Every structure is written in C-alpha cells, then in structure tokens.
Image (tube, rainbow, N blue to C red; front, top):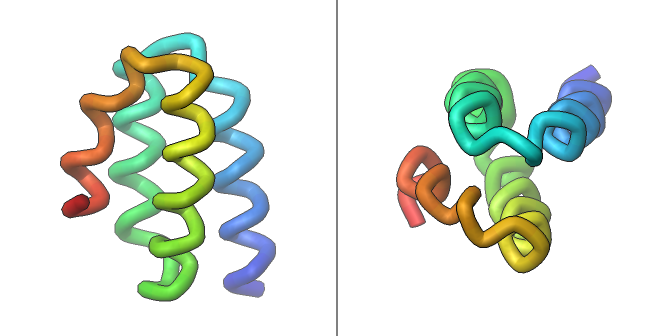
Length: 65
C-alpha cells in the first residue's frame, strides 16, 4: 500500500510541475505521507524534475535537503 502512495505522489508531482506553488503543496503532503526511504527516492525524482523546471528548486526546503 505504501508503495502505491509513492507512485501516486510521483504522478501528481509530474502533473503539477508546471506550477511551483502547487508543486510545493504536493511536496508538503508527500512528506507527511511517505516513509523515510521513500522520501529519499522522492528527493532523487524531484531533482530530475528540477533539471527540467528550475523554478521548482524552492520546494527542496520541504525535503530538508
């Protein structure tokens, strides 16, 4: 079940990556819902999205990078 939440989170983040505000809100939700090892994987995924959309960089503060 938890893995399904991780995959769902990745899907949502991909869809809202056009808007940094929405993206940050979804990252905050993910931090509350995902397991610690999933957050590390999510951090890597978000880094790849930031390479495509640099304005999303501001959302890394929620992942405590």
